[in-house]
Image (cartoon, rainbow, N blue to C red):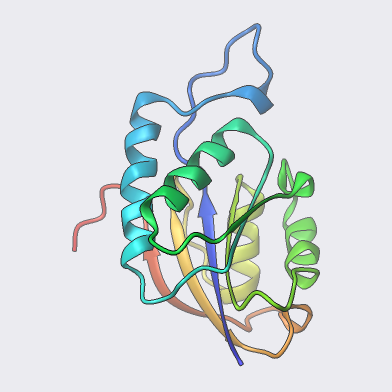
Length: 163
């Protein structure tokens, strides 16, 4: 079975404020624009998402909602606490535990964990600026079979990309 995985770094967040926790940082005005454009990018992909897992941080939720709002068919939106400040190893373990009923999944999370997961799955070492979205495919019956260099990169989107 072909499984599709979108790895997404949240859109640009506002600058850290002294009285606000990192967890509570909202999208900046530029980040809100990035999230809208990102939502349209995801809408134009030839897959229909079943689920979006996101960190509970404000900026990942806002990015996820912008994606959902752009889509005609609404995927399940699921808060996953372990994605906040997750290391690459925690990200790998998370993917291996994802629900096998979902064939097409997006993960909206933070760096460096999201880029480390991409590096592990593809052996490509591309930078993940805010609003980067990578579409990966793999041929597995279960998410728990995903392993190093086992995914094929179908596309790599980043803000301002031409073409």
